[in-house]
Picture 1: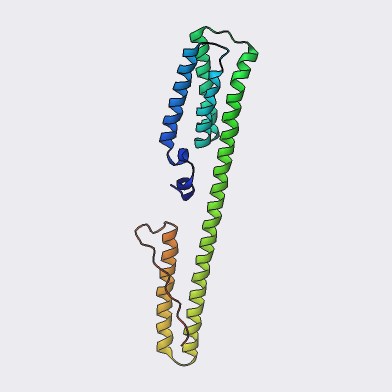
Picture 2 (picture 1 turned 30 degrees about the horizontal axis):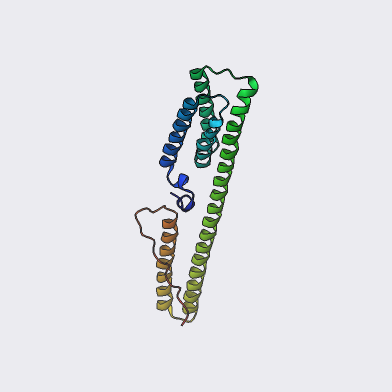
Length: 197
């Protein structure tokens, strides 16, 4: 689970609980609708609660499906009670539910996409910083090795080159570990750059 999901609202952190809560709301509203029986009663408007919950938690498709489910329950109530609704009566009851499922679901999907882009940008920025650290470390160490070789300290230059190779391997291993490429490796701290003495 991503950090954004862990810090998000409860219905995103606990999707199974959100489904259970929505199902309980659908059943409760339908039962209340059947018990009241009066076609002028506005109890059916309470279907907007589970629709909004599902759309917020799972997005456009789920929100639209929840709205369609509410319309189906409304149709079941009409059949059970023998209520005769006009076209306007159907439209007045179903349009708000369908619009709510679509609009909130679309807004939820848009928010998730924006969070995903923000996460990708943060990861890219971190990778760029790590790449810059690798470059700085290797260039600095190679400069030290070059200076030693030019000054005639061949053994010292070779030693610095060997340490630079190990440092580069460690940095690359750390970077790949952060990307999840080498799964069995622990993330190692960045080796210190070698400075000219």
